[in-house]
Image 1: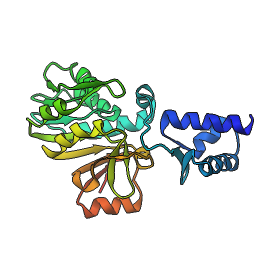
Image 2: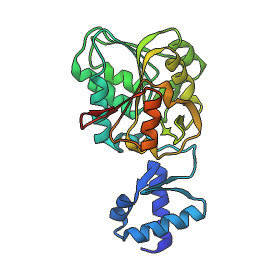
Image 3: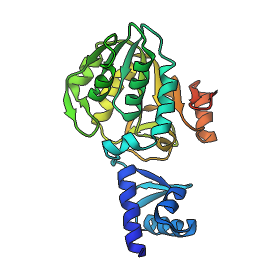
Length: 260
């Protein structure tokens, strides 16, 4: 494969997925790690992607992967996170749920647990559809402008709706966790409703697989210190773990039983 063709395909992969690791790219293009590193450096020098240790991400901080691809991406890791999150929910709880494929996986895990007395307030039509499999769950869905990109409702009407409630738990995913501890999304409309939920939740649980710690986004939702619990599938960097300890944010690493 010609260099130009391979680099074009690397960019296409990153635009679909947001991030790709060197090992994954080596396997996809059947070339050496040195070749991939040269490709990534060349593309980074041209301002077309952002290099990271072990991989690369799209340069645009407003890009997100397509909705259908996000269901496939890191599906096993999301299932582990979802199971850990569902185990934190107790019967009779009131729950805010934001949009996102990890939250949708958590909705499915909650249904599997067959708990009674749950009340869920959400702006995610996808999560509501999944929760609807269990008739015992009371589901309150906001109004607002429907967004095809994440199957959710947005805008002032949705924010006003969720602000009527005070819930025991917030379950939220995120587009990116910045190295400085900012929780970032790709669009402003994705933050306005989540901020209203955040302000009205007693316990705030962030669901973030390892790829979220390497992605780039631009719209501020909150800071890591605003969360009471973070559930991920791999231990983040030492600096990130220190940030969590300093802010007394519980860390749960799903799939291996570790927490700190």
